[in-house]
Length: 519
Image (cartoon, rainbow, N blue to C red; front, side):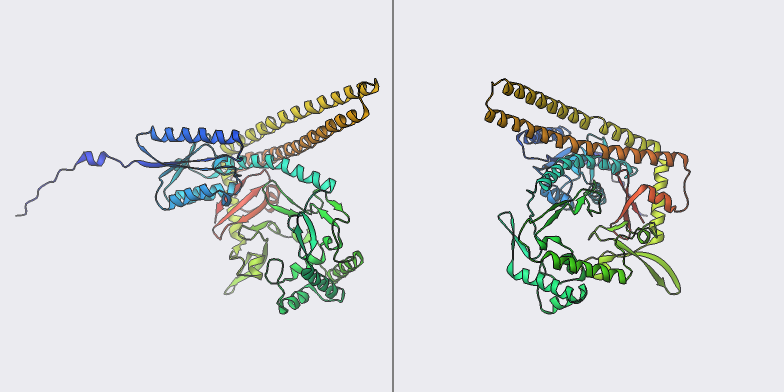
């Protein structure tokens, strides 16, 4: 007969759980003494906070100094922390807030997802969010979207400074076009490249197309600006660049509130500076080449920015590749006898080695949009209402206080100017002293006025977001769960679509948030 002996378990050993290795992440956006003092305080706080918890083991503190939160690639300590997570050195991360972790919504969600896949969670103290217990990524997406809007307000002051330099003609072109180089802040002709520019204009004036000129340069093994091959787009860019005439038009492109760059078709002011530098091409040759290009386009029926064509389909011109930034093109694919609509990255179609993004099906995008809208309808009270409240609070707090302070300074300087004028009129001040002090006060007034205009612009942008969220709330309050794609509803609320892969896209809403959906 078999003999069985029970071996008693050692319950005490099972009760001993390994400690969680907890790391903290801190970031300050400038390297000023005040910010660095704040960083030291954060370091001391987290070290004590983690070591005081008996279930935690201190795994170190990672911090970035003087780094913006909008792009993760520039934050070496953050990347080092993620690398340590991948190497199983960390179990949990603590950080002050979403804005300290990332001000770019896409980066934030991507990092959170990657860490969750590794079994590592993040605690955001300010928002009281623990990613271990999140039922949905939607709230995190919205909160990180609000953090991103802080960066927008900060960038407005930088944009104002650049616009001022546009207006007074003191802006320096840091990256000159092909044919020029930057020497001590000035655009100077590169003789070898200038000959290539003259060749391009000469061939164009002779009636040759952009692709033919590009092929000629490639056959001669002449490198382009970045040492690569010439394309028809590069040639057209040179033929349409007014800088070769010695003039410069500033703000031909602009950055939107999502930190994406766009061609300026009149949405922003542009500034023409004549005789800004030495010319390579005469104005007459430039105008003639431009007329030839326009005539050839007219003959082919090509109309620049043809809205009728771009709006033919709801997704036209709105799908952007996250890998290369190109737009997607609508195509008809087939599987056997069955045909279907697909959207493909333009760069992938032309140069598959430069962009690996694969096509996505039209129907999958529509299903993802319907899913995203149904989530908003289901959670409208928990999601859209708090978002609207936060935006309204942002619109009515910091910017308004700063505007009021600037108005006080403007009023104060104006009063001082009046006093100076009276003193000068009575003979108490010499003209030279009056001019110096008066000019100084006027310069300060101009500076305060410019800052005020930038803040008003930022405030108007936030008010616009409030209006967009209100519209979305009204639609979702009235609506029941939807079962099919509505093109008009899509165009009313979606600014663009960002494609991350065949399985994941992001809907950038006009109210300023980006919602990620899997397909």
